[in-house]
Amino acid sequence: MTEPLSPSPDTSDPLPPGTAAPSGAELERLRSGLRLMALRALGDVSAAEEVAQETVVRVLTAIRDRRDGQRVENLGGFAHGVAKRVIAGRFRERSRRTMVPLRGDLGQKSLPAPGPDPLSALVAIEDRQRIHRALEQLPSTDRQLLKRCFFEDLRPAAIAESLGEPPERIRKRKSRALARLRQVFFDGAADRTESGVGSVFDGEIPTGLVGP
Amino acid sequence: MTNVTEQCAHLGDGAIERYLADAMGPDERDRFEAHYLTCEHCQRELEFAAVVREAVAAESDDPSERERRHGRPQRQRRSLALAGTIAAAAAAAALAVFLVRPSVPPEFERLGAVDQPPIYLGVALRNDASPGDSIFGVAMRAYQAGDYRSAIAGLQDALDAGFDAPPVRFFLGASLLMRGEPGAAGDRFRAVIAAGDTPYLPEARFYLAKALLQQGRERAARAELETVADRVDDTGAAARDLLAALDEVRSGS
Image (cartoon, rainbow over all chains, first blue to last red; front, side):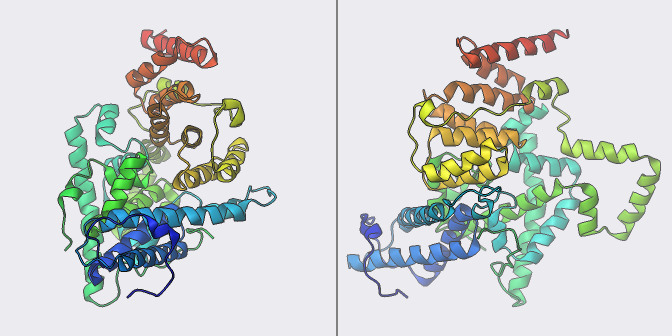
């Protein structure tokens, strides 16, 4: 499971007491979470995969070098710290690459563009299309509410104030709208898994969505 | 299915949406990330929310483009044919409902409009030192060129690289405001205000007021303006002018 490598100075931070090697399932869950975190930060699926792998290796190396056989206490917290340093290193590399004589577009191709959330690139195309279609079936007022939740006020209480409605009514409307979309999303993923088509992580990466 | 832990339940109202919009404070964001690294339930919820967010963003496109991309079932095509014969104004009204918040009085939107973005004078002139000038510098060149989309991306890079300084938050808020995202802009300005007495504090309050007006939140906007109205500088003068304009709107004159 672990790859032999020399200890990295970045793993010199003290491990939480009682940290030991995670199980296979814990490791896969950790890798998946690291991929999400790195993709969120970097906007690039391949870079996120590399960060996730590098972080896992560093974490396992640190655990191995402790020679302590107790159970995991705070694997998430420790891995998070390591991941942040790995990601920061990527940014430093990227900033060195972008410091070239400015062109008219100010090096836009070197910077990740906002727009569709990069995390959605991890989800299969058909699941995303299913959500798009399900969203179109919602009442326009619910679509507008979700737009405000995700892109504007972000809290139902603030949206309720601006609309002059009770906060609880806004929460219920949001909850119902998301429940309908959630059913489409998770039921679709379950159907594909059962049929052996593949997991929701077999996402095709649309061109233009991810960075260099 | 996945297990929901007590920590998942404690994520709070709209936590995932705020995370995706980078509206969480750094401590909250760190706690959330450290949690979902080992929580399958929250990872799936995060993916789901990201897909919904993308779909909601796509819904803001031109509706005719949306229709061309996704098509419509037969019965809806017949309904649209009927609607299309009634009046083109009906379609325009529907688009206006979707794009314009009907609850925001036009007077407040007008007063909340930002014609000229906050001026970037250069870090040295604002008397603070910001590490990571390479990332920040590239982003601010985009800002000065009016390329707010690139500025947002670059300033977000700076934050993600750990350069969480008030000028980064302030100009990220300014860029978002210029891109027509008052809610997200307001959160950035609040973060600057929460950082305490920095050279960016007075303007952060003023532009937060602008963002609040764009969302129809007059009372909250007034509260922010009143905190800087006593200043004997351009920000104070602008705040007093805006408060006077709001009084005129209220009095109906």
